[in-house]
View 1 (cartoon, rainbow, N blue to C red):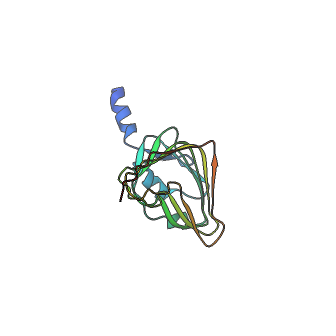
View 2 (view 1 turned 90 degrees about the vertical axis):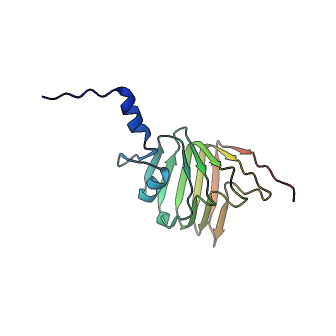
View 3 (view 1 turned 45 degrees about the horizontal axis):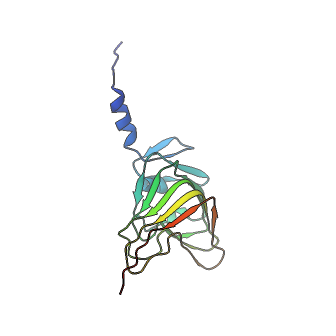
Length: 166
């Protein structure tokens, strides 16, 4: 019998390399973006660490119902849109902080959708941190067609936007 002793510090560094897990499959992902690309209908992504997301697509979410449990962590969006061009999805984000990066240049920062789409924000802090002359919209629901809804429950929205003079 061979026994290997692994220091606890090594175990924590291994676990820290992944920032998300899909709860139903117990599969961990290096980034939230990777988990978003793998999430199936009626599944929950649970964050394991702070992460940033520079995401422009979103068609993989068409007609899906899924959740992101931030688990007390912060998801910083550094791209123009977190989810774009998706049709008919329902996303629930809960239990953490959603922030915009200070490098954004004043566009909608999180959600753009088409058709009957619902975004539920529960127990979230949303921080707008843009530093531009065209301050963005933060949680922005743009519905092409009809039926788009963004709901807030127990949320705090902080406007840290600095608008430069023109």
